[in-house]
Length: 49
Image (cartoon, rainbow, N blue to C red; front, side, top):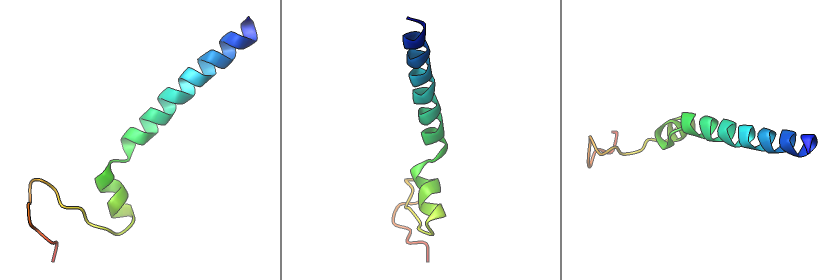
């Protein structure tokens, strides 16, 4: 029972850690890290040139 509970708590913690790390990387930040530029809704039609 104790080992099962530890595994369950570990998996729940890993899930929240993964979701937290995924939340740090927005699509805009990911595109900028690759050297790309995404259009935002604030600037429709802008090509970045």
